[in-house]
Amino acid sequence: QVQLVESGGGSVQAGGSLTLSCTFSGGTFSNYNLAWFRRTPGKERDFVSVISRRGTNTYYVDSVKGRFTISRDNAKNTVRLQMNNLTLEDTAVYYCAAVRTDSAASSPLVYNYWGQGTQVTVSS
Image (cartoon, rainbow, N blue to C red; front, side, top):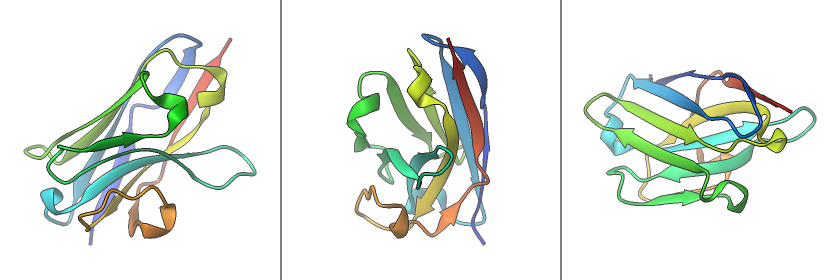
């Protein structure tokens, strides 16, 4: 059974940076597309970024383009989300998700496996 464990969340001032990590186990990491989603209270999970199985393709929601970078290390079964120039609107619980597919999907309905989430709080 695939398991995902996020780490790296915390509190930071606006303009600061955080790096989230997600460790994958229970399967062959390189067979899975990995994505980050986030959720604020009262809202559904919103797509943030996805990286393809080999790391050759990445996609971002417009609001984080140029500020966030997704990467993966297939040797260490880890996916990361480097977040720079954080704004108040980035405050959310961030989730790592995985799906065994060739297509880089942005809908949370596609993803089979989810981590427990990690809180990111950006203050002014």
